[in-house]
Image (cartoon, rainbow, N blue to C red; front, side, top):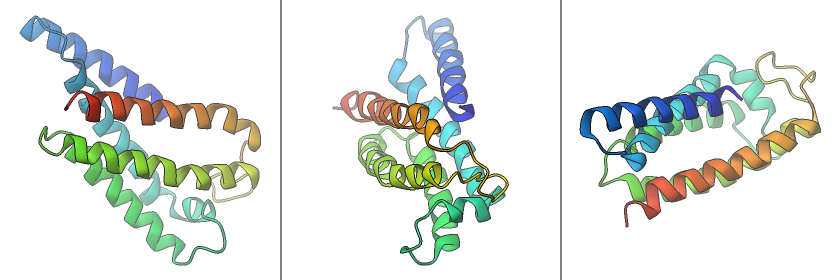
Length: 152
């Protein structure tokens, strides 16, 4: 919920500033500026809660902790890449693939009741998916619309 709130607040603020300063709504710019801090914020979880994040990865995948750190770094780099118009469409495609690839980990974590912040099995459970899956689809649509289709 916090990442989505951050995305919307930064988008609204940068859109308003853009309209005030340039007299134009620069929605693709504002949307990509908003996605950058959202990705950096979610990346923090990879470094603050590596145990819980590693628990989200199914048992058959090796090197869980390393994967947590690598994906955290990737989120920061992808967020920063959105700030460069020449990289934006390519970054958008990579982000969509990333969002698709992490969804099974979120589903697994919900089914196993993983609390990523505490690194325990006391999380919200499968009901969380009623929020998480639509949010993931929203993020994919956001990236497609503002990073890819707006750049074509």
